[in-house]
Image (cartoon, rainbow, N blue to C red; front, side):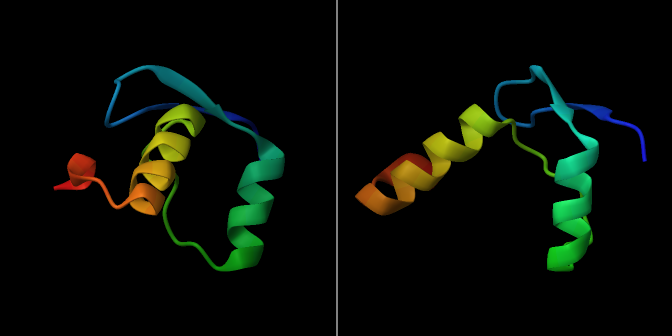
Length: 56
């Protein structure tokens, strides 16, 4: 399973979906590749924690 280069749907930057991450996703039963880069995933998670209107 080679590394994949994906495009973040929020910031539109390229990010690497490594072989190790792909194995992790498969073990967790996730069907889809991530659509956000790690930075945008962290920002989104933090926004949910803070209960902001960022996601609305």
